[in-house]
Image 1 (cartoon, rainbow, N blue to C red):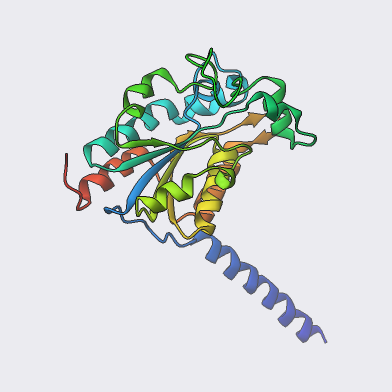
Image 2: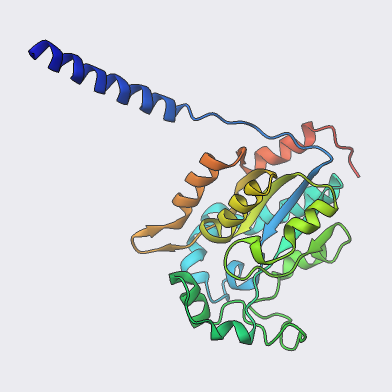
Length: 250
């Protein structure tokens, strides 16, 4: 009986050791940049990325630590240099969105602080320079013809906009994903794009997340990026990957 007990204990510890070892050696499928690759950036907007934005109090620490603003700009520069298309998935709330009858915790927060607010879909009145507008330093890139701005997503993922349609129409099947916010819109875009059959990598330091007392969204996001996507780049690594790719320089 004692011998059987010891064998059982040994079996359990062996199984735990194998499981722990396997997790520590989590495979990295890798990601190859080619002509079917595009960059997708979520919410490169003032309310997330400007110190004057209404969400800066909960994302500013992560944005600063990750050097997110500069790293996103590097993606625009790489895209232009290597003739890679960029797709922007913005987040807008119109007046009618404030009549929703139920919301998640961070939806309530965003609506309460007026995040991404615009009057309506047919008006750009007071949009310029608002929290919903793009960060000023990105506009010179976004206005170029290699960038497509799709319709706004409404909660966190791209299920309600035309991102997948625009990607498919351009014959894109591989995504380099970045933007804001890591644990919300970026992660939701990653999951939905994967479910739609796209191969997805994430630029981990070209995003940032919501951090509130007791809740570290950046840690959660980076963990899930690693577990779910094909590869998680650092921006410096992505620059090297582009230089080593077979893409021609513009």
